[in-house]
Length: 108
Image (cartoon, rainbow, N blue to C red; front, side, top):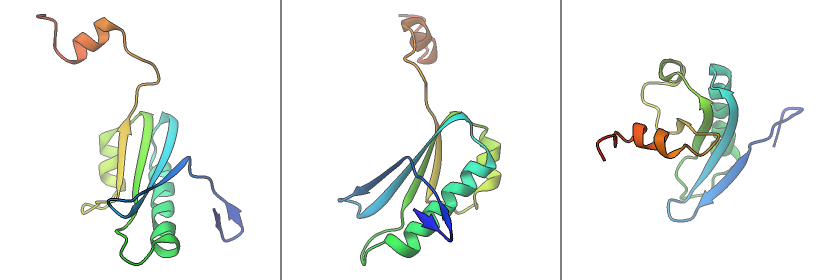
């Protein structure tokens, strides 16, 4: 998308027909920063002001990152945030042992 004279690239844009809203997804290979969250806020604002159709609900922004600090997310976003979410992804499939430990299945 072009904002002003600059080009920006969202990794994935979906439209949820049932919810009637855009879902904007940005993938981050490093730790999530406040800059990344601000960038997603810009994307959400753009889609809210320029791309929404009558009857749509506001767009949702999803940041998928290799690492995140919940405090950075909490203090970067407004307290009443309902549009931008951050989640950690695994860059690889866990081993059986790692999965067992994560799910507290050591007793099985």
